[in-house]
Image 1 (cartoon, helix red, strand yellow):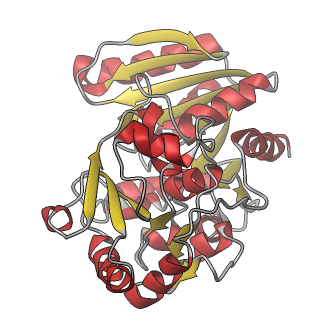
Image 2 (image 1 turned 180 degrees about the vertical axis):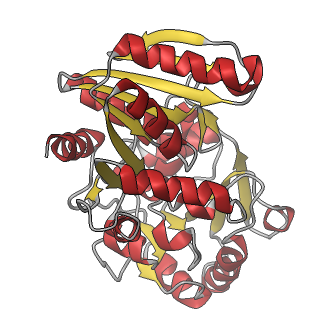
Length: 355
């Protein structure tokens, strides 16, 4: 099959051109390795020049809305689709790309697929016009895929009885493999003789941090030597907390090392329009590094962890989080069962497109 993905270039606060990562990179690459002809049209609004390159068997093309204006932007995308002659146009990454893929597929006479890894309507809750267009593209698509069953059920509500949404799980990028814990701590200048709890603090967001800090204080009441290692850009109150160590924004290559340095990783999600349909990449990455995890028990997280109560705490329950963290401060690695890979997810997407 000839597959054209249409995606935001800037996802998860990183540039897919300079920092290849995640679903929008590794699904196309895995499908190309299976023998499909794959191209990815990346779209941005950062006033960047057009780019064309080939990487890992996939043709990549980047266009920018601000560089030449909307007409030139759309014209370039449609010209690329005309040259590529796709059998399928697959919209992914956020709500804008379902309608955009629908437009391209209609003009090229291709079939339309829409892929979702989050509830995109939670990104811009005020943008009702975009929500309507997104739902319309989901309803019109020949195939819809989602990162898990909770999100799939939500999207089925927009399908009007058409074929059900197929599940294509999230996975960790291939670089996330276990490293020696002692060497990892030395590489990052972390202490070797204390238990380390890790948490990724999203940029410009305090979501989940207050619950984590409450849990960490309870842990420290029993283990005063424990340290909380924060990655990303946590809020100021987190940095001021006794026992907190900050690694800031690490280069991509050091992220598996940072995870491997931990005794336990904490993943906090919330019972919100976003959290109820979120399948955290950071959870996939910690599991791939064989690090014990403690996560709040939203339905998607429970599904990812196979309802393992040793690893799941009720949403917002700092004491339950602390109790589970204390049980894992032993430095022992965990081999998780049925851990998805991008190759397996690509096979699921191939099956959905071939059905």
